[in-house]
Length: 160
Image (cartoon, rainbow, N blue to C red):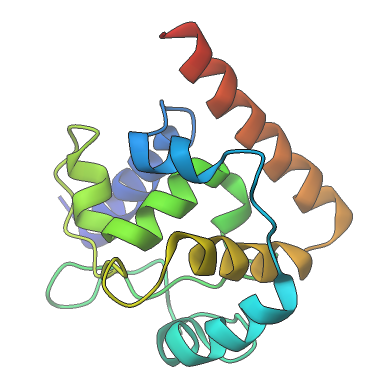
């Protein structure tokens, strides 16, 4: 199997996870008491995410092609990437737990290069970073991403 096919298959699995049930940590963090702060999130993004995902959310070059170790380069978080294709629950878990663990909890074995930030960031700080990233997208991407987040919640409720 060539590297491009592996990358596409991996991305397809990640996209599919955008429609899965939220884990308990994401459910708790999505309570209506959240008060996301995109301004604080921008500072936190620069401190914790920009070294891989770029100061301007541009991602690493050739982000769709696997590296020699099989991991994918850090994708862009602007409208040119796929971040807006995923619901908030998946984005939160992927950031908090790291890609490999977030996917493993869904039964998917994927060699993600995304580290977890459980020890570095509070849940609210992760939500603030996500609020910043989302604030940079055009209205259409924000609307589509909100629809995916709603689908996650509906799926969670249907499975209860």
